[in-house]
Length: 175
Image (cartoon, rainbow, N blue to C red; front, side, top):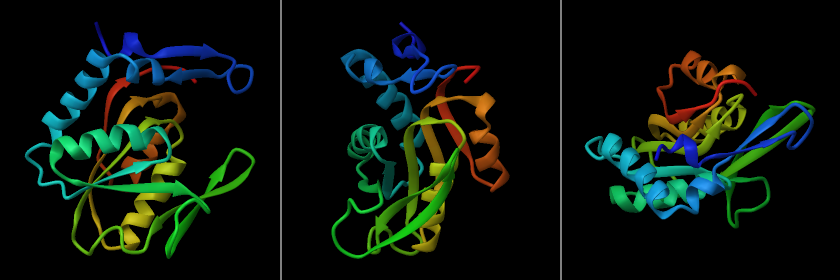
């Protein structure tokens, strides 16, 4: 069994021509999801990660499980308007328009080592916005980690151009 084989492809979702990579099929498989978290924990176990920041929503699932395994705290990075209390936000471009993500103002302390995780990296816009939020709070992002990379969409290159290290467990060519 490979992790990639546990990820379902849904053609033409959310629009014609898109091959949606659905990680929920990996997450529902106890051995597969456990293996994914094990692999990430092995990679980051000796890197003194203080916080794992997960991007809404599937990044919460991966991030919380990984934070527990690493003995680190978990920080949710959410869509605008979902967090109570004082927040900072960062806008990012979508295909048509903009969106925004937020984090609590006290989520990360200056100098804390943070691992940013999400289920998938496509264009990298959301991850870039999350990186900016962590930087504004003074956090030090050790690396960004994803279950899936879609390299043809350029997200990895985008983050690497910002000087960020990027890791993924699997990748799928095409859109």
